[in-house]
Image 1 (cartoon, rainbow, N blue to C red):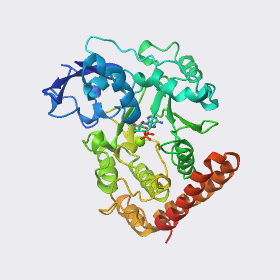
Image 2: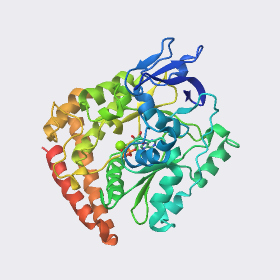
Image 3: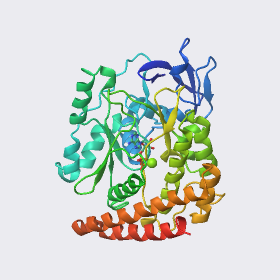
Image 4: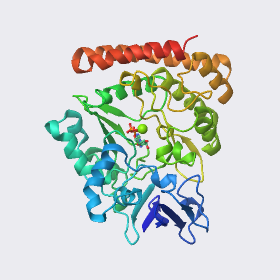
Length: 409
Ligand SMILES: Nc1ncnc2c1ncn2[C@@H]1O[C@H](COP(=O)(O)OP(=O)(O)O)[C@@H](O)[C@H]1O
Ligand SMILES: [Mg+2]
């Protein structure tokens, strides 16, 4: 059995059900603010599924390389290895406010220290990725297919403990996310993401601090769910808000599964402002030709599960068409995954955020200007980094055609 924690307090117990299912029960007397998700209020009856884990528990399970590493390391002991086993391993250190421990265990987050500067300057030579993944895999409760880890930076951690005296055991968690670029799979992925995030930032969207390693093999991102006092805010991605598991992340539309769903759960006086940011983010994804903007690449953040939820800062922007020229939208607009024309995007803005045609046009123009400005930075970066030349040039080309297709006219 797994004990489920929210905001460092005990919320309930999760157990296996039958061969493939699971069941979750809140502790008797759990107050409403212990709710594990905005979609799973505290109640007496259990939450049971015949297959898999409820989406909020499944949300941060590693996919791809990280999952495979953990399976190889831990499958021997248990014979098999499923989502429940994986949650038991990475549960103590997760993105957001949820934690998982053994039934009788206390919270012990304690992520190992790692200097971010060392990663950025690449002090350990070529085997850094392998070393870091081995060291941090079991404290990296974070989803996604690309190899990545959660780390606790010494400098940032000192800052946090100064702010709040010595941090209690429960709060020595990760401060940063490190995403690695694998040259033989998607060359220059970290630099690609770095410049795409730069476009979003120039559009005025909230982007957490992001840094590219000197040799461009890693992208380091500050956790946006970490509070200045070392505790964590609530985070839920749109798989959870749509009641879907990770495997269903490419199912849905930007109209309903993202924009309408956000309005349903925002519970906020800032909803107009956030819907506009959401529309801008969808438009940026189209203009940059990011075919991977699926349900897990949008999220909400909140301080109180019963209170206001805001759109999460921007993450995971990549021009995927430099690797997959035929790539298309991850979710549908107007019932199709074809890249939208400017006319179609404008209609999405006008109907879903209720803005005037002039205002929607301004949003698209701002994105076009940002792309043009970042393109210049890409060109300058290419000059000093010849290994980025091919991908960088392809990006600029994709952004030009994406801008004229989805932003102009
Ligand atoms: N800055 C951040 N702070 C907190 N959580 C984040 C941040 N960036 C991403 N995440 C979480 O980590 C997950 C994986 O990161 P992402 O950048 O999407 O990786 P991938 O490219 O493998 O999909 C996201 O779906 C989100 O849940
Ligand atoms: Mg992602």
